[in-house]
Image (spheres, rainbow, N blue to C red):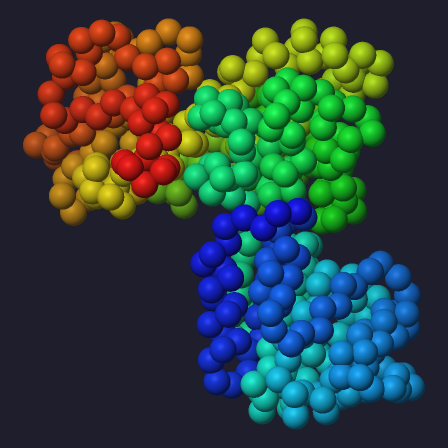
Length: 464
């Protein structure tokens, strides 16, 4: 897989290794997000031992680890009985040879021996800290890494010198890998999301429809069953979690709606939702003007575009896909894809807003999010409490140009947003896939910014 972006993460690792003294880094994140590629890129020009753990018996895991050490240092393979001895053997070599030691998929080792974090603690305290070497523990099980490596109860708590919680790419980051024009790039991002492996599975000399049918709807394709593998990485019994994700992906976003769609009572549902949030599979939103801790106007969303696509279009239609995938695409996915992409377009537009803020094309705002109250909704609202200034924006993924009506509606809704003093300053923005009606820009004052897809593309290509 090609290596894209990750410049800041790579720089952090390189700076840590080049600085005097030891380093103990923790790198974690969901499957397929690019952790291994990042670490291999980091290690490529440095002395390193890279050990990829597997789901196999403890003694075999340990034997392979020792073989890696011996091979790197051109040593004979010693007879070693326990992890404490294995780490002592590593430490003896690090006394004289500077090295990066990467243990990838560390949770697999913990599955076989939950005392391993204690052995690692002793190794860091008694051997690693007196060297210029670096230990990196990496894992795809977010729950295990956060509890057994980073958590307060872990023997390793407080030992790390740095950590990287690797996230999927934003649209701006993913744009480099998506070789479509801007419109199809947004449509494609609404399907793959920002997970590097999903992005690179698509063939961009083919149409988006062809990619969906061959890379997702084919029962032999990796992405056809990918979400099931992802859930099994974290959850022993994923059935109820799958039903919640499907409910949210198909438009049931409040706790009451999710409970009604899944048949799960509110008490257990709350725990399931907390688990899915902790695993970064769903997100919780409240109106940007409300307090996240106090507001009861919660809405949930699937936090990954590919999972949202899969649970909306694939999971509910598995039987039909097995028999006639092209009919599912033509009859269900293609007609409803614009509605699906419209939600992604709002995410992309939020990225544009933040980029425009950074470049002073829009006023500085400290908070940006959605707003809703009763029947009223505004796609993007930015708040600048120190300056009593508010940004209000709408995003339209439609085939018709945006006209005067939307601008008038946004002004009307702005009056119902209860935030700040009556004398607040207001700034407006409109985003449109199909551009704007003739004369609209001339009739709006300087408080308005208009972004068509060309402006969106320019903003992400350093011309905003």
